[in-house]
Amino acid sequence: MINKKLKINIFKRASLCRHFEENVYKYVQKKIIKFPIYLSAGQEFIHATLSEIIRNILKIKPLIFAQHRCHSTYLSFGGSAEDLIKELLGKKDGCAYGMGGSASIHSPKIKMYGHDGHMGTQVPVGIGACFASKKPTIIFFGDAAAEEDYVIGALGWASTKKLPILFIIEDNNLSILTKKKIRRNWDMHMLARSFKMNGFNISDNPNEIIKYKTYFFKRPTLLNINTNRLYWHSGAGKDSDKIFDRYKFELKKMGIEGKNIDLKIKNKIDALWKKQLGKQ
Amino acid sequence: MEKTVRETIKETIRIHLKRNKGQVYGQCLTAVGWVGGTLPKLYEKDGMIELPMADVSNGGIVVGAGLMKKRPIYVIRYQGFNWYNCPMIINYACKSKELWKIPCPIFVRGIGMEGGVGPVAGSSHHSLYYRMPGVKIASPMTPREYISVYKQFMKNDDVYYVSEHRKSYDNSSELKDSLNHKKFDIIIFAISITRFESFKVKEILNKKKIKVGIANIVWLKPFKIKKKWLDALKKSRFGGIVLDDDYVNGVSKSIANDLNLKSGKTICAMGLRDKTAGFHKTVDNLPPDVKRICKQIETIVNKK
View 1 (spheres, rainbow over the protein chains, first blue to last red):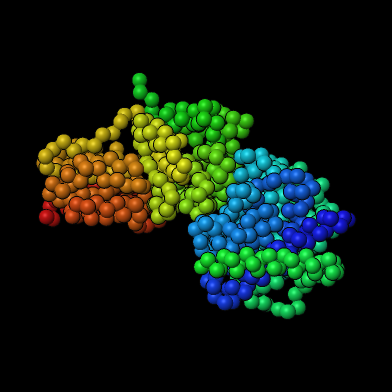
View 2 (view 1 turned 45 degrees about the vertical axis):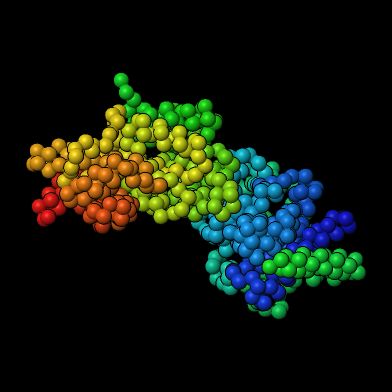
């Protein structure tokens, strides 16, 4: 089980991600941000929990590879919110020099490498980086990217070479709007096991994620984490109002303490956005 | 005795692994033949990395090694295999410096050959890389050219596509431009294996009183037109002809266009015909040979 301090730390990170994304949502709707945006709201507990476990408990600073919908990855692992705001506003001093937009962000400071825009390429690229450097590596990808042939080929090699990689599948069950069961009849955690890797199918509940920390970076391990995308595949809109929202669930469980943290972080992030927009 | 291109590449790889602590990646590297005798007998512990048969994934794995500053050399045994091997190199490694200011230097050894090898394995495919920003392309056919390209790569932080050809591996001579006359009828701008053909063409056509100049193109991208090339071209009677071992609709036409714009002369292009190669010699698609080039030049000269 997660102790109280850790629970609060995870919640703080998730709150930072959530309020960041709420601002992006707002400014996309207002047409202040005008290019494709991939919001990670709904999935933020994955990154918040993993970053706490990896950075603060295991004391590891891994190489990070992600793709689109990675604002929460960047923010949870210590990327500057201010630099990401600048990036989304197309400024040259943004985290990817105004070139990366929402989908191709990076940060040398947190060892997060950019993404080229082709779904799943971060898997072979991250595996190559891990093999060449022998450094612990975490690779995030979605349930759709997992189906890319080059992802599967590369996973096999990572297993063969016994690399210290943690593969995280953010399984929101959707490729744009096409559900997983229409696309395939197999599961990634089972595929991982067939490759002789550790493979687990779990939820984005922090209490569940933390149970697997002993497997991290010892040999190739894949966590297929079931989660929910709150907003559209791209842009600002909702597919449904009935989606389970992990953040609201955890917020409610935390009571007044959670509300206070939520409000404090909301005000801080809102102010950061206003400050940057004021410079426009 | 001068080293051949084969021995030069082998020695370059040895230096890359042993002295420069780089890495070499590819499929079946340590198999019989050691890639046409161009690899020293070294293994994974030395940095010679055998990749699986997952062509598309492998390109990505090499990009990862490039990001980690290992200066990987990636061996593509047949240039046509680039169609599945190059996507992540041209989409990630070539763009990385511009997008994120993170260089991803990779030295891709694309090996060309042809003659009875069918629709995929035959010919050069440097045009695949040509259109993408952030890549340098060279086609060295001599020992000194190869060493020069490698040395540039080691001083640089870009992706290099090195368009090799198996038929050059036994060569130990340097190929020099042949532009000594005051006025030529036509100038050949030759790429890859066609460079060897162009010297035979010159000899044959000189006997027919057609004066042919030869400019050797080693660097396809960036393509820089040498002053002596331009002078010879401007003075020529019938312009120029670009010869290539890739399909004609690619690098050769692009270079012909550059030369035309600079000189105002008509430049035509010859490469592989715009058709699929079969395996049998009657249905193969080969680069322009002496006979075809001579015929083309004579047509140009006689028409005018």
